[in-house]
Length: 341
Image (cartoon, rainbow, N blue to C red):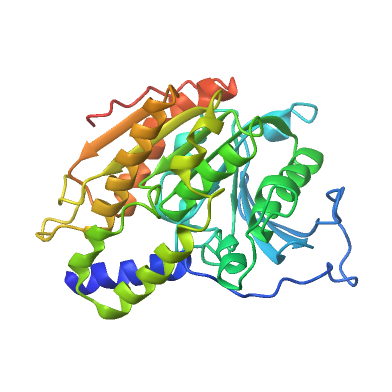
């Protein structure tokens, strides 16, 4: 069990560390644009139909190069060619892929009774945080006028493509797990008014404030990387969720996390606490306190026992869905699950 936790911590910390992938400067000229491009030339170059509701898009982005995006269309999409559908952008976690939410959760069944258009973009194994690179390379960090590549893609390019080509409306929500949960909160705070709701499931919300719990891994490689991450995070400023809390005023919020103690959705053989979820829970508590201090309302589900695993994030997606639908003005005929389920 300790090996699994250490490996998971390594994967997440690697995702939190600086990356230096060089994005393609321009889309490949040999590929035809499908539909209307984004303002900066980002464009859809391929659409693959997987089933009546699922589409995989290949996007060529000036910000990050070639990216895969999975769409989950509303059940009524084909019957409403003139409709505009509210959009939920759903982010994967560290070391994850754009296929994770559909392969590891019941997101398709959960959204069948709704009018949501669910957009699940890749971030090349969650390099959502390439703002670290600017700090590590001695730069002064990114600004709203000079955003990192993934932020530009997720917040600007992708919504333009979805709204111009896939009947997306400007009623947008964003949610994610772990590192994706961190990005969902940061994006919403740094771009007020862009999203009506932001949801974080076991998000790394205290990256610069709460690192001591992971000392329990007793892995020198993990601890060395964590030291690097924390040193960078303290310089981030505009990417600290605690510092950004006041900018979330007017955005609906759903925040959930466990405490790392094995819980009801863990395998019966799990007997060891999960230090990474404990760390995420500690960061969640710090973020909760910051929200309360700034008078920012939020739906909070600190559910206690539970580790950093997909069964909990699947449950939280279901629990948060009524809040998401309400914020986006979308209807659902599905019964609302209770937090205790």
